Structure formats: structure tokens, C-alpha cells
Image 1 (cartoon, rainbow, N blue to C red):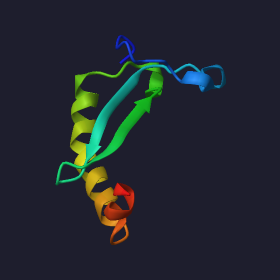
Image 2 (image 1 turned 45 degrees about the horizontal axis):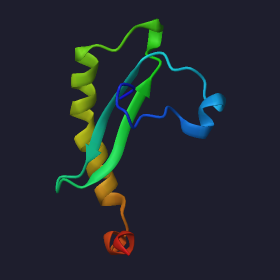
Image 3 (image 1 turned 120 degrees about the vertical axis):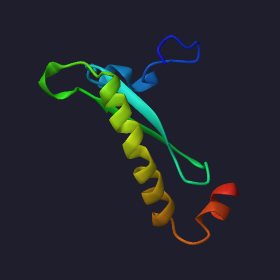
Image 4 (image 1 turned 90 degrees about the vertical axis):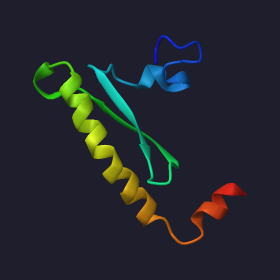
Length: 83
């Protein structure tokens, strides 16, 4: 992400944000493909770096997060967001 030309760090809040030790992020989507945002992790325990196994586990978790977001919306919420 940091290499992307649109990346601006934490913007105006950058000076208020503590440094992150590692960063692992993946998209959270509903079963219908609707994007709810990102699940982001930092500061792995034991000062370790995130690895491929961590990424695999997070990707296994995100469908549950997406289903929870889908089922926690009040009826008609999507129509309100489209306005």
C-alpha cells in the first residue's frame, strides 16, 4: 500500500498515530460480494513479523466477519446508503 501513488499515510492524523510494527490487511466482503472494508492487524505478539500462515488465517476469518456485518444490518440499510 505504501508504494501506491495515492497513499498518504494517515493524512492529517499521521503525527497522532503511533508507529505500527507490521501490517496485515484483507478485504471484508459479504457473500454477495458487497465490500464492508478492511480487517487490519498490526503489532503481532512477541515482536514477530506476519507471515504467509498469518495471511491464510486472516483470509479464513474474513468470511465470518462479512457474514456478521451482513446479518447485523437493519432491514433497508442498503437503500439508505444508496441515497
